[in-house]
Image 1: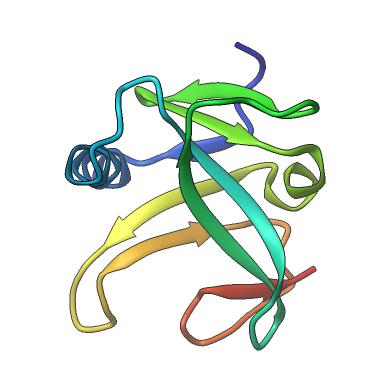
Image 2 (image 1 turned 90 degrees about the horizontal axis):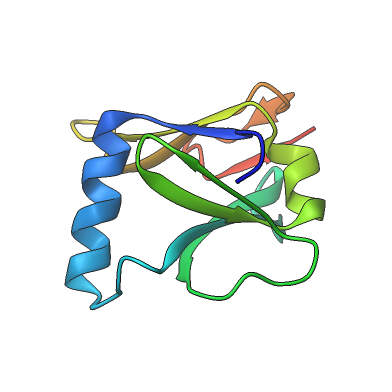
Length: 112
């Protein structure tokens, strides 16, 4: 495993494990974190499970969660913390991204 580029909180880890089980994914499936164009701020975060690393992927582990990130997305995600919150603002994964210069109100898109 290489350096850690994204950290995962305990709460996020718990929900990732729950989603893995509910989706029928094996422990070999890593959490793929990527960035795509879109959203009201220009870039959106994308999460999925994947069991095959692609050429150029960075694969690493934090807090018991194996993560895969392609090189293009890594430029936007280095130093990001993945958290999970619930409550009045809505339940879901949230990214604390030090590279984002602006985020939308829902926290699902950002710009740099």
